[in-house]
Length: 261
Ligand SMILES: Nc1ncnc2c1ncn2[C@@H]1O[C@H](COP(=O)(O)OP(=O)(O)OP(=O)(O)O)[C@@H](O)[C@H]1O
Ligand SMILES: [Mg+2]
Image (cartoon, rainbow, N blue to C red; front, side, top):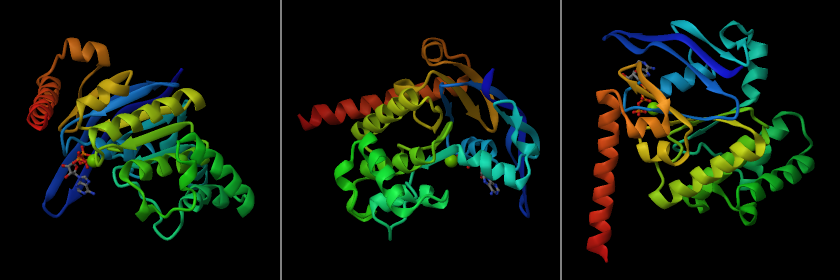
């Protein structure tokens, strides 16, 4: 059974300046325990797609099933429960600047009704799991980007999610920190059995961590394959272009490294 199934998702944004078709007839499945990538250039519809998956956005038509439950038919109360098992991390971390690290991670536990002390004890465990046990009392402004993303991941783990949505979670990080965060995501995918959907514009991210990937272009899912196959035999212009961009980036990095040495 697929963990998640999107069926004929369409999303049109209507505004005064006209209508934008952000998603057109998107269908795909994500298996339980899989790390699934969605790649596309800016404006391709990636964020719209993740927002439809947790119903922060209502699709114009089509629907999303999570474990055979049609989330577009849930009541507001049922949706709140379902969302509790869906974690999300973003490019800009979205931490509460007024709370220290420990209390950022404890927050979802407190909201779920846990006493403050118990929530903090549990939060400490998650800070250990993401490799920053020593940062409990620091404030987000005192952390590096990679450390902030670790806090965001610890906070997500505290809600015991079955699904983790990552929208450009490494886009603000340098290549080395990106690799560390991706390794952490793979760790928690295995250790906690969390299904992960990674949204990115970077093929290197897909290559590093994803099992399968879908290529989004102008709101259409134009190609979907295992990462290995996509890299070996890209079928569409969109996929070939994204692979080329990566090669250009690699060459740039190489040039810089040569110049610096
Ligand atoms: N709230 C909105 N109202 C109107 N149009 C929108 C809205 N949100 C997104 N769009 C449009 O829908 C299309 C897809 O946007 P989306 O944010 O999903 O792209 P994206 O792939 O996430 O891009 P990026 O990589 O830049 O984040 C774009 O043309 C965008 O302008
Ligand atoms: Mg986006």
